Amino acid sequence: MMTQYQEKATVIRRERFSPDNVRLTFDCPDIAAAAYPGQFVMIRVGTGNDPLLRRPFSIHQAHAEGLLQIYFKIVGRGTEMLAEVGEGAEVSILGPLGRGFRVAENPACLVGGGLGIAPLLFLARTLSRLERDHARDTIILGGRSSSEVEPLVKDFEQFGMTVVTTTDDGSYGRRGFVTAAFSTHSLPSSCTVYCCGPEPMLAGMSALCRTRGYSCQVSVESVMACGMGACLGCSKPTPSGGYVHVCVDGPVFDAEEMVWNI
Ligand code: FES
Image (cartoon, protein in one colour):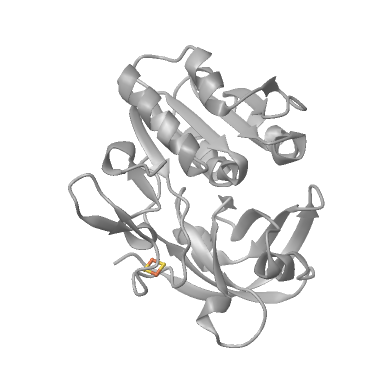
Protein backbone atom coordinates (compact mmCIF):
# COMPACT_ATOMS: atom_id res chain seq x y z
CA MET A 1 0.00 0.00 0.00
CA MET A 2 1.41 3.35 -1.01
CA THR A 3 1.53 5.95 1.71
CA GLN A 4 -1.30 8.43 1.58
CA TYR A 5 -1.88 11.54 3.60
CA GLN A 6 -4.75 13.77 4.49
CA GLU A 7 -3.31 17.24 4.77
CA LYS A 8 -4.66 20.66 5.61
CA ALA A 9 -3.06 22.57 2.79
CA THR A 10 -2.76 26.33 2.56
CA VAL A 11 -3.46 27.98 -0.79
CA ILE A 12 -0.40 30.08 -1.47
CA ARG A 13 -1.13 31.17 -5.02
CA ARG A 14 -4.15 31.41 -7.27
CA GLU A 15 -3.69 32.08 -10.97
CA ARG A 16 -6.56 32.63 -13.35
CA PHE A 17 -5.47 32.01 -16.92
CA SER A 18 -8.89 32.68 -18.40
CA PRO A 19 -12.42 33.06 -16.97
CA ASP A 20 -12.52 29.25 -16.66
CA ASN A 21 -8.93 28.04 -16.30
CA VAL A 22 -7.42 28.19 -12.84
CA ARG A 23 -4.18 27.03 -11.25
CA LEU A 24 -3.85 26.68 -7.50
CA THR A 25 -0.60 26.21 -5.61
CA PHE A 26 -0.75 24.68 -2.15
CA ASP A 27 1.74 24.25 0.62
CA CYS A 28 1.24 20.53 1.06
CA PRO A 29 4.58 18.95 1.98
CA ASP A 30 3.72 15.33 2.77
CA ILE A 31 1.68 14.72 -0.39
CA ALA A 32 4.11 16.71 -2.57
CA ALA A 33 7.06 14.62 -1.37
CA ALA A 34 5.28 11.28 -1.88
CA ALA A 35 3.70 12.01 -5.29
CA TYR A 36 4.86 10.88 -8.69
CA PRO A 37 3.59 11.94 -12.14
CA GLY A 38 0.14 10.78 -13.16
CA GLN A 39 -1.19 10.40 -9.62
CA PHE A 40 -4.08 12.46 -8.33
CA VAL A 41 -5.48 13.98 -5.16
CA MET A 42 -9.01 14.34 -3.79
CA ILE A 43 -9.74 17.85 -2.57
CA ARG A 44 -12.62 18.75 -0.30
CA VAL A 45 -14.42 21.68 -1.78
CA GLY A 46 -16.51 23.59 0.72
CA THR A 47 -17.15 22.68 4.32
CA GLY A 48 -18.97 19.74 5.84
CA ASN A 49 -18.23 16.04 5.92
CA ASP A 50 -20.09 14.82 2.87
CA PRO A 51 -17.55 12.65 1.01
CA LEU A 52 -19.13 13.75 -2.26
CA LEU A 53 -17.63 17.15 -1.61
CA ARG A 54 -14.28 15.63 -2.47
CA ARG A 55 -13.30 15.98 -6.10
CA PRO A 56 -10.41 14.39 -7.97
CA PHE A 57 -7.66 16.51 -9.51
CA SER A 58 -4.56 15.28 -11.28
CA ILE A 59 -1.31 16.54 -9.81
CA HIS A 60 -0.03 19.29 -12.09
CA GLN A 61 3.28 19.72 -10.28
CA ALA A 62 4.77 18.54 -7.01
CA HIS A 63 8.01 19.93 -5.70
CA ALA A 64 10.23 18.42 -3.05
CA GLU A 65 10.07 21.76 -1.19
CA GLY A 66 6.44 21.02 -0.47
CA LEU A 67 4.50 22.81 -3.18
CA LEU A 68 1.65 21.02 -4.90
CA GLN A 69 -0.24 22.42 -7.88
CA ILE A 70 -3.49 21.58 -9.60
CA TYR A 71 -4.76 23.05 -12.85
CA PHE A 72 -8.44 22.82 -13.62
CA LYS A 73 -11.36 24.22 -15.49
CA ILE A 74 -14.49 25.57 -13.83
CA VAL A 75 -17.20 23.16 -14.93
CA GLY A 76 -19.72 23.24 -12.10
CA ARG A 77 -20.46 24.11 -8.51
CA GLY A 78 -17.50 22.20 -6.98
CA THR A 79 -14.80 23.65 -9.19
CA GLU A 80 -16.43 27.07 -8.95
CA MET A 81 -16.17 26.93 -5.16
CA LEU A 82 -12.55 25.81 -5.36
CA ALA A 83 -11.69 28.61 -7.76
CA GLU A 84 -12.99 31.08 -5.19
CA VAL A 85 -10.81 29.83 -2.31
CA GLY A 86 -8.57 32.75 -1.38
CA GLU A 87 -4.83 32.78 -0.89
CA GLY A 88 -4.08 31.92 2.72
CA ALA A 89 -7.16 29.71 3.11
CA GLU A 90 -6.88 26.01 3.99
CA VAL A 91 -8.41 23.04 2.21
CA SER A 92 -8.26 19.36 3.00
CA ILE A 93 -6.34 17.26 0.46
CA LEU A 94 -6.10 13.48 0.36
CA GLY A 95 -3.36 11.78 -1.63
CA PRO A 96 -1.33 10.96 -3.50
CA LEU A 97 -3.76 8.46 -5.02
CA GLY A 98 -3.68 5.97 -7.86
CA ARG A 99 -0.96 4.61 -10.08
CA GLY A 100 0.81 7.13 -12.26
CA PHE A 101 3.06 6.99 -15.32
CA ARG A 102 5.90 4.48 -15.45
CA VAL A 103 8.83 6.60 -16.51
CA ALA A 104 10.92 4.83 -19.16
CA GLU A 105 14.52 5.63 -20.09
CA ASN A 106 13.92 5.80 -23.85
CA PRO A 107 12.89 8.97 -25.71
CA ALA A 108 9.50 10.28 -24.70
CA CYS A 109 6.56 11.79 -26.49
CA LEU A 110 4.01 13.43 -24.17
CA VAL A 111 0.61 14.13 -25.68
CA GLY A 112 -2.01 16.14 -23.79
CA GLY A 113 -5.45 17.34 -24.87
CA GLY A 114 -7.50 19.93 -22.97
CA LEU A 115 -7.16 19.46 -19.24
CA GLY A 116 -5.08 16.39 -20.01
CA ILE A 117 -2.19 18.82 -20.32
CA ALA A 118 -2.21 19.27 -16.54
CA PRO A 119 -0.37 16.14 -15.31
CA LEU A 120 2.16 16.24 -18.13
CA LEU A 121 4.06 19.13 -16.58
CA PHE A 122 4.99 16.99 -13.57
CA LEU A 123 5.91 14.16 -15.95
CA ALA A 124 8.05 16.44 -18.14
CA ARG A 125 9.92 17.73 -15.10
CA THR A 126 10.60 14.17 -13.92
CA LEU A 127 11.77 13.07 -17.38
CA SER A 128 14.00 16.15 -17.64
CA ARG A 129 16.06 14.83 -14.73
CA LEU A 130 17.08 11.75 -16.75
CA GLU A 131 20.51 12.30 -18.21
CA ARG A 132 20.06 12.30 -21.95
CA ASP A 133 19.55 14.65 -24.87
CA HIS A 134 16.11 16.10 -24.22
CA ALA A 135 15.84 17.60 -27.69
CA ARG A 136 14.74 14.08 -28.70
CA ASP A 137 11.79 14.27 -26.30
CA THR A 138 8.59 15.79 -27.67
CA ILE A 139 5.61 17.40 -25.97
CA ILE A 140 2.41 17.85 -28.00
CA LEU A 141 -0.22 20.04 -26.34
CA GLY A 142 -3.68 20.67 -27.74
CA GLY A 143 -6.93 22.31 -26.74
CA ARG A 144 -10.06 23.81 -28.15
CA SER A 145 -8.59 27.30 -28.31
CA SER A 146 -5.65 29.40 -27.25
CA SER A 147 -6.76 29.88 -23.61
CA GLU A 148 -6.47 26.11 -22.98
CA VAL A 149 -2.91 25.86 -24.28
CA GLU A 150 -1.01 29.13 -24.43
CA PRO A 151 -0.82 29.96 -20.68
CA LEU A 152 1.10 26.74 -19.99
CA VAL A 153 3.50 26.69 -22.93
CA LYS A 154 6.31 28.60 -21.19
CA ASP A 155 6.28 26.11 -18.32
CA PHE A 156 6.73 23.24 -20.77
CA GLU A 157 9.45 24.98 -22.74
CA GLN A 158 11.85 25.11 -19.81
CA PHE A 159 13.02 21.50 -20.22
CA GLY A 160 14.70 21.74 -23.63
CA MET A 161 12.19 19.32 -25.17
CA THR A 162 10.52 19.96 -28.53
CA VAL A 163 7.11 21.53 -27.87
CA VAL A 164 4.35 21.34 -30.51
CA THR A 165 1.01 23.08 -29.95
CA THR A 166 -2.37 22.67 -31.62
CA THR A 167 -5.83 24.15 -31.22
CA ASP A 168 -9.10 22.99 -32.73
CA ASP A 169 -9.90 26.51 -33.92
CA GLY A 170 -6.39 27.44 -35.01
CA SER A 171 -6.20 30.35 -32.52
CA TYR A 172 -2.80 29.12 -31.26
CA GLY A 173 -0.26 26.74 -32.80
CA ARG A 174 -1.32 24.38 -35.59
CA ARG A 175 -5.00 24.02 -36.37
CA GLY A 176 -6.31 20.53 -35.65
CA PHE A 177 -6.12 17.73 -33.11
CA VAL A 178 -3.06 16.43 -31.28
CA THR A 179 -3.48 13.09 -33.06
CA ALA A 180 -2.86 14.81 -36.42
CA ALA A 181 0.22 16.59 -35.05
CA PHE A 182 1.49 13.28 -33.65
CA SER A 183 0.95 11.49 -36.98
CA THR A 184 3.10 13.96 -38.88
CA HIS A 185 5.81 14.54 -36.29
CA SER A 186 8.93 12.45 -36.73
CA LEU A 187 9.86 10.60 -33.55
CA PRO A 188 12.70 8.24 -32.61
CA SER A 189 11.72 4.62 -33.30
CA SER A 190 12.09 3.52 -29.69
CA CYS A 191 9.69 6.04 -28.27
CA THR A 192 7.44 5.74 -25.23
CA VAL A 193 4.24 7.74 -25.63
CA TYR A 194 2.47 9.16 -22.58
CA CYS A 195 -1.05 10.49 -23.18
CA CYS A 196 -3.69 12.28 -21.15
CA GLY A 197 -6.93 13.72 -22.44
CA PRO A 198 -10.49 12.89 -23.42
CA GLU A 199 -11.35 9.31 -24.39
CA PRO A 200 -11.65 9.82 -28.18
CA MET A 201 -8.16 11.29 -28.18
CA LEU A 202 -6.78 8.40 -26.11
CA ALA A 203 -8.44 5.89 -28.43
CA GLY A 204 -6.93 7.64 -31.44
CA MET A 205 -3.48 7.79 -29.86
CA SER A 206 -3.66 4.16 -28.84
CA ALA A 207 -4.45 3.10 -32.44
CA LEU A 208 -1.66 5.25 -33.87
CA CYS A 209 0.88 3.87 -31.38
CA ARG A 210 -0.15 0.30 -32.10
CA THR A 211 0.37 0.88 -35.83
CA ARG A 212 3.78 2.39 -35.27
CA GLY A 213 4.90 -0.06 -32.57
CA TYR A 214 5.31 2.54 -29.82
CA SER A 215 4.61 1.61 -26.24
CA CYS A 216 1.76 3.82 -25.06
CA GLN A 217 0.54 4.74 -21.60
CA VAL A 218 -2.78 6.52 -21.18
CA SER A 219 -4.16 8.46 -18.24
CA VAL A 220 -7.89 7.86 -18.27
CA GLU A 221 -10.52 10.36 -17.13
CA SER A 222 -13.35 9.03 -15.01
CA VAL A 223 -16.05 10.08 -12.63
CA MET A 224 -14.71 9.37 -9.15
CA ALA A 225 -16.77 9.58 -6.00
CA CYS A 226 -14.45 8.01 -3.43
CA GLY A 227 -11.05 7.79 -5.13
CA MET A 228 -10.15 4.75 -3.04
CA GLY A 229 -11.69 1.67 -4.60
CA ALA A 230 -14.83 1.65 -2.45
CA CYS A 231 -17.70 2.91 -4.61
CA LEU A 232 -17.14 1.10 -7.96
CA GLY A 233 -18.15 4.33 -9.70
CA CYS A 234 -14.99 4.39 -11.78
CA SER A 235 -14.92 0.85 -13.18
CA LYS A 236 -13.92 0.29 -16.81
CA PRO A 237 -14.03 -2.94 -18.82
CA THR A 238 -10.81 -4.66 -19.89
CA PRO A 239 -10.18 -6.62 -23.12
CA SER A 240 -10.20 -9.90 -21.14
CA GLY A 241 -13.79 -9.32 -19.99
CA GLY A 242 -12.93 -8.14 -16.50
CA TYR A 243 -12.86 -4.61 -15.20
CA VAL A 244 -10.50 -2.22 -13.47
CA HIS A 245 -11.02 0.67 -11.10
CA VAL A 246 -9.57 3.82 -12.56
CA CYS A 247 -8.89 5.23 -9.08
CA VAL A 248 -6.76 2.41 -7.69
CA ASP A 249 -5.62 0.43 -10.77
CA GLY A 250 -5.03 3.64 -12.75
CA PRO A 251 -5.58 6.39 -13.75
CA VAL A 252 -2.61 5.44 -15.93
CA PHE A 253 -2.83 2.19 -17.89
CA ASP A 254 -1.02 0.60 -20.80
CA ALA A 255 -3.15 1.51 -23.81
CA GLU A 256 -3.51 -2.20 -24.62
CA GLU A 257 -5.34 -2.79 -21.31
CA MET A 258 -8.22 -0.52 -22.34
CA VAL A 259 -11.45 -1.05 -24.24
CA TRP A 260 -12.49 2.15 -26.01
CA ASN A 261 -16.21 2.85 -26.06
CA ILE A 262 -16.36 5.32 -28.85
FE1 FES B 1 -14.79 4.93 -5.98
FE2 FES B 1 -12.97 4.38 -7.84
S1 FES B 1 -13.85 6.27 -7.38
S2 FES B 1 -14.05 2.99 -6.61
